[in-house]
Length: 330
Image (cartoon, rainbow, N blue to C red):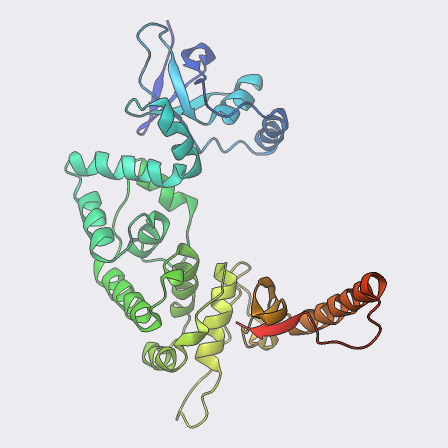
């Protein structure tokens, strides 16, 4: 008889025959399986469980909804399989789950523990809905843990039913302040986890003056654009907080720690986050965008040179003409 043990809300087994692949799911990538095996051999954390559907009554197997590569790697290494049984879903839903698996898992567990009457999760759901954090589970979990940094431990506690709100008062203070900043910026492009984590990282610095920063945001809200990572958002926050403070009494600049390494950032990184684009003649088409103005200038010069050469060779035009490419600040 197959033996299955419970690990929190997660099950574990060494019986690989209990599982089956779903038709229509992604094909097994041999290279990916081999990479996973190498990682497991180096350090087997076994933290991420498979997602499986309810047992098929005909085959007696659990269909693997997500995690087939992890399953294959662990099967070949004769390692235990951890898995979570979720409600049966249609095969049409699998591609959607694969593209947004993390949110799907979190929603599933949030609703499960809410239905069980778990007060911590009921509060979590209300906090998320009331403060505009829909689908931003990692942000919500971090704020309610009274932290400024996403951790696997927090997210593991969440799916295992062990989540606890650490400091309600401070969590509310932080999210109200963040939402106040967002209302001043008025940009939907800031409504992502990259921005939230950059701002959380900043406000947890000793000496961070929240009143000073929101006053600066009101004056320089146009600076909050174009960032595609938490590091780039921190560059903008750094710029807004520390620059253009002439005449402000008792202002004390902050040297923000680097977002990834947590070491102090160099002052040289506080540069204007102006982006530059190359456009075609008559401003008809935006071709390329970069933060590096010198590179943009050099590229425009080279492109115009090549274009004039083309005109000479094909049309016999042998005199300077208006440049086809030019620079635009965006």
